[in-house]
Image 1 (cartoon, rainbow, N blue to C red):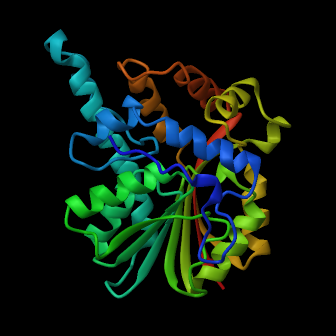
Image 2 (tube, one colour):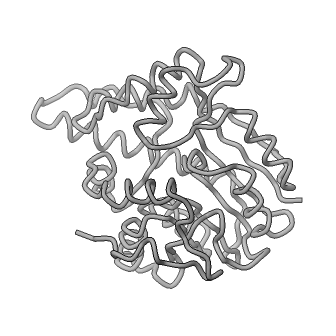
Length: 295
C-alpha cells in the first residue's frame, strides 16, 4: 500500500511557501491521505488501471442488473467505471485540439487517471498537482508502471500556488475539485499559468442560485466530503474577473443521474447517493461543464 510521507505540514512548494497554508487545507489533505482504501475509487480503477476521483455520465446498460447473482456486483462496478471514463473523455473533448508539444495541468489530480488518458490521447506532457501526498505517490507509481513517467508527472503542490512557470500551460482542467478552494484565487493562478488563447475546462457540482442557498441535500454533500460547494454564479464571476471567457457551458445534470442510480445498487454505495439524487432531481444542484479561453 502506498503511504503518505509524515512531513506534510512542513513541505514547501517551489515558491518557498508551505503547500498547506490553512487549517482547512490540512484537514482536506488529511481526509484524502487517510482515505486510502476507499473501494469506490480502488475497485473501479483495478479494472484497467485508470483510477478516477470523479463521477460518471451517460445511461447505464441495464443488462448488468440481470444474469447470475454472484457476478452482479462485478458487472455493476465495471459499468460504473465505464461511465466515469466516459465523463473524462467528454472533458478532454473540450480541451482539444492539443498538440504533442503542448503542456497540460490537471489541478487536483487525485490518483491520476484523467492525466494518463490525456497523455494517451494527445501525446503531450501532463503535470498533476494535489495537496494529498498519498494521491501524488499513488499517481506517480501508476504513471511509471504504465511507462509514462517522463511525460505524466504528479506534484505535491497547491493548485492555488503551484510554483509552475507563467504562461507554460496550453490547457488546464479541474474535475470536481473546485469546491475545495476560493474561485477568484484559483482562477487568478490559472490565468497566470495559461498561455494566451489557452483553454480551461471545469466539471463541477454547483448549487442553484435560484433556490436561494444550499439545500439540505447539498449541505449533506458538503459535510460528507469536507468541501464547500459554490453557487453557479460564482464560477462565471470568478472566470471573467481573471480573463477567462466562457465559450461552452453544458448542463450534465440529467446525464449524471443514471450513474448515481446505479451506484446506489452497488456494493460500494456509501449512503451519499441519495443526497446527490435528491439534489439533482429537485433542481437545487447542477452538474456543469464549463470551458473558457484565456484572453
